[in-house]
Image (tube, rainbow, N blue to C red; front, top):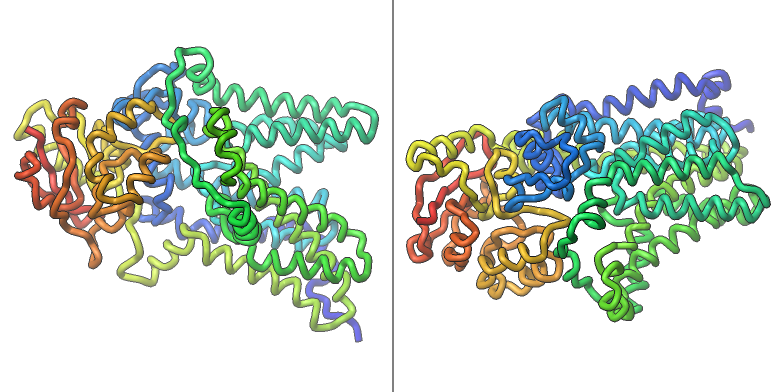
Length: 580
């Protein structure tokens, strides 16, 4: 009995038609988020609680496109050097210079996913599974549904496009396009998360090819040079501050990495291998199952593509082990003696894993399709696998899932972009301050139970903030404010002392989870015993505490309640306290 033909041959070979259909589905995937605008629900981690407000703070001070790394962004983290923030040449920076902060984010979000789709499509079509049009289109679409951290740009989402360019140069094809891709990628990806590793691996690849072919591929060398120069250009401000200007001591020098036994390292290796890490995106749950299945049946019949599966599987095992090995207790003394190993997280090489899993998925589906083709019903394993992983990616994608849920729920989880930043409410707050205490609306403030980025976004000069690179001395000064609260909670103490990138006005009663103070049925509305140093706040020229909870012991603490503010368009009930 002949096998089922899922698609007729003429249609199946029309890759342009498939690409367009896939692009339409991609736009449908993006539409629930993009069209909601400021009413869209997006992730808090590193987006609402950092990226959007930082770009807006620079724009408000006319520093967004500044070439001077020594300029100070006063509203962020007690004053942050321009060179320690996102480059003025970065794609997001230019988007924010043209559009509003929220519109810029939504455009960038769309670009990340569209480029993920295009990159995977051309990579698979050209070099991995030629001729299997509906398979590589579907895999590209599924890959684009991944919950990428938009804050990282195309650091992960753009890797298929980069690999496509590298293979083009290796084969001497599409040279101009490939050089443009390698020149563009550094301006939309992060040096610390990808640039260092990508440049290193590409250099190693060139050496391996030279050893195997006994000749140097000058086209690849040129592409490598373009990649490195573009990263150096995009990060010139940071490199200037670090290596030319009088260096400062970053808070990262006192990082204390959690220590794991070798058994713990192996357990974490297994966990990362199967689940990845959240920063990379959704887990490849069904992909892992299918890859092992493909290896078993491919090995049994000696399929020509099974050797690639073994190689890719080995790569992911090595990457997973490298990530876990970073935390091994046996490296503690080495990290203590070599500052670079403590500051630079070399285990981020694991960011390549998502790309490797999807290439493995592509090879697997070709093997399965070839071997199960004679079995009439079994051929449906391939579309089932694609649909299952695609559905899982959609369900696990926080932006897509939350915005779809909001359409069917009168009480959606979390807060929309507009409610989170609460512009109207903060206009009232600043207006009241100016009316009662003229000239004080520009003085420094600090947030309690509220993300400091809300203050940054609304043009308030805030002492607190979230930064991956700031002065160690500032961290120590700020700690004097919250030292007694940290002593009440060992978890908070370790979180601040051993890491400290989130330099917040912590309360032991609130803990680390700021979302519990948002307006809603489970809102934490008050705390009873806040023990912070008002004298230290004064010494740092702080005049107001913007609190998302009522401070019951405010009189004992020595601060005066000015007023409280509620607004239906805000996620916060704000109590404003003045430091006399």
